[in-house]
Each structure stands twice: as structure tokens, then as C-alpha cells.
Image 1 (spheres, rainbow, N blue to C red):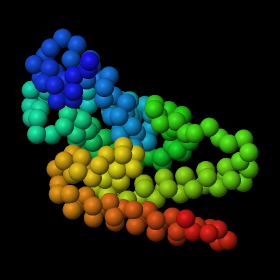
Image 2 (image 1 turned 60 degrees about the vertical axis):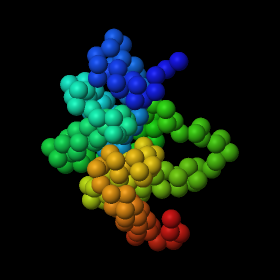
Image 3 (image 1 turned 30 degrees about the horizontal axis):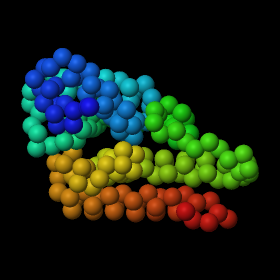
Image 4 (image 1 turned 90 degrees about the vertical axis):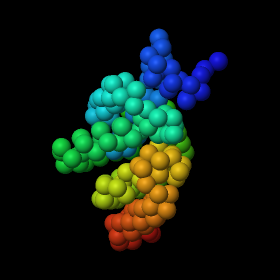
Length: 195
């Protein structure tokens, strides 16, 4: 029987043998997906998770059980990713198809052999437009959008992870979604129907 997340974190804080290895195994895939949502590069996301695990280990005594261990860990990761992005301009995102090949646990459904090349092209073009629209969001909106739609965190989890009010998360997410929708509609080529 596995310890629950809070019991595991307590074991990590106390330095019990094997606890941190279990922590890494439990959270590394979710943290990777979150890091990829920010950095959009496989190697950069792997490096971010590794750096974050080191920071978590060094800061384990400072963890307080008021927040869920993953929420605490994701905040450390997000801060690290934001630091990386501040040190460099955001590079063009990989395509979602390439990213899905690299991202564990979130594979794309196999292509439907009956799907026409035109439909595959339209789906690929739609993904590209989504990526471009998300990349243009202000940093705080992009963070909330990524946490919600890439990591599938609840609004309450996002509020705790960011240390802000639930209403702030809701309004930022609403503005981000509206901006993405607007950007995609403006990017629609003549003759195409809007998304």
C-alpha cells in the first residue's frame, strides 16, 4: 500500500530511506508535462524537472502541509520555468505532434486510417494556430492557461499554486481563453470558417 501524498511528503521531510525516490517517481511525469507547457522543448523540460527536484530536496524542511505536495512542487517548478523564460526570449514552440511524441503519458490517439489528408492537414493547422495564440498571452495568463489546459489542474489548485484568489484565476483564465479564441479567429485564412 502506497502512502498518501501528505504522508509521503512527511517521510521526505524526515529523510526516511527511499521516501524521496518515491516522491520523484510519483510526480516527475506530471512535473514534466507542466514544464513542457512552459518551455516547449523536451530537453529544457527535463532539465527543469531535474533542477526542481534538487530544489525540492534542499527545501524539504520548509514544506508546510497547508498545501498539497504537488501544488508546492509545481510552484517551485513554475518559478524555475519563469526564470528560464526570463533569461531567454521564448523560442518558437515545437508542434503539438512533436511534443506529444516526447511527452510521456499523453500520446495522441492513433491517426484514423480513413481520415483524409485534407482533414489531417486541417487538424495540424488548427494545432499550430492554438500554439501561436497561447504563445502571445501575457506571462500570468499563459501560466494559468497552461496549468488548466495542459496540466489539467483545478481552478482551486491553480489559485493555491499561484498564491492568488480564486476569482483572479477565473478572470485571468477567461481573458486568456477569449484572447486565444480572438487570435485564432483573426488568423483564419480567407475562405476558412472560424474556429
